[in-house]
Length: 347
Image (cartoon, rainbow, N blue to C red; front, side, top):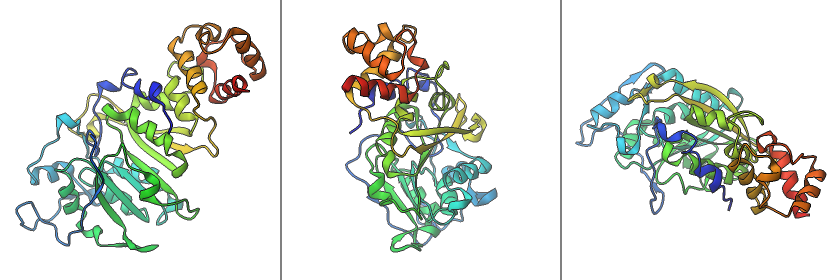
């Protein structure tokens, strides 16, 4: 299993701790297993009364009204901020399932919340698996999506088109939930990453990069900038290198605090990660050591930053074969150069 703990655990140091932004994903803790939620045929409150769903433009439920009707409020302990602007919901759904894949994509949504994005995804995708950890929100999902839960997947009548699973996004297996690769049915992983576990969920995405065709995440703007950064820029770092070893990263658009209930203190951004086939680099122990050394002492030359990685004569010979100057700084190297240096040292 990939171990990217250095870069991914450092996300909080890089500024993620200042915001708690997500429309659907509660702070996640370990659960024993995913629990399928049965379908319901009617929309009912917890007391049994039938209630119409309150919707705004684009057939998207207003999370504020949904929570109020159920007697719920955003949980500060979970860092919950629910997306309430329909045009942003539709833009995220379109990023997950572009027009060319309508009715074909299989989507795994991390943190479905009140089902706002889930419904928009279901309108575009072949199937959606919605994972939610917050047990108070699972019955909300069941109520809000009751009209979809009984619809079967047209390509697989044994499966429902929309499935709700109560479980931990940090332990799910996309391949198990989305199935094997199929050129006619792309697999998409999407969701918003709460600040507490941004690094761990990015690490999981990198680990599962071979089992999806696209990842679309909402993260803090600062994190999105780091993921999409170019070598030599101030935002380029270990997180960039480890993620870009498996993915191409494209920052799509920003989402302001006013798009959430309650408004967070930071701006968010939606980023698309497209898997590299094959990966640009394998995360070996030596590759990790090179990246760790390069960015742990960012202002030092590679000659000094890597002095504990290997003897200087080996470093010099490997650097020469890799086309790397040891007088350069680590932030100037792209993923391929780190990979080349690791391969040269291992040869």
